[in-house]
Length: 241
Image: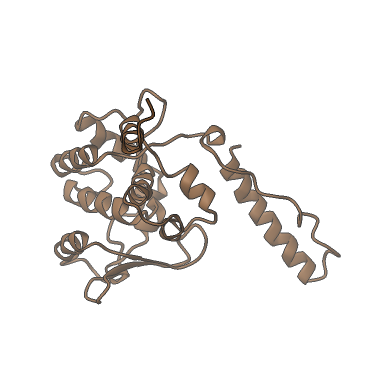
């Protein structure tokens, strides 16, 4: 069991114990002082990576030309991947979205995901970039109100990674790199968070947009830097020679 899974179970057990104390089923909470595990790449079972801008564009082009999978056409996947990489929404959250989930005409266009479908149980409201708004305006035309925008089976059957893998392979991008890191559907969320960090967004703001419980999770698991980026950072400093 990795640290993330362990923490998930511990939170559930802590909530149950708090309920038991409140209902006088327990005198005190036996898990009150039990701490969550610190999550790092070392104790993460499946290591993921972010996609570069070039890789993402290649993925989009491959999806556009690809065949239909689980009722997701190539154009369906283009918009699905684009919304995922620009909002950080998870597969199950994206699968829950309906046309009315998108508010494209407000001063600050946003997508709203109900708490029943988010990992932390809280409603998520995420702003949308103008380019994404324009893409969605065309895509949502003719979509039926109250019906999922994308066939939710890709999330229910946990086949998001399989679908992305097929499009990556069509684009000539390895699904697993030389360091053993995967580029699956959840990597689109990693890409969103990494891009925020690389753009100089304040870590606390990045954490809020990622909807993470701790800044440690945002910075140490979901934010990635490759060797070229590290070399650029070193070159920006003063040389001591």
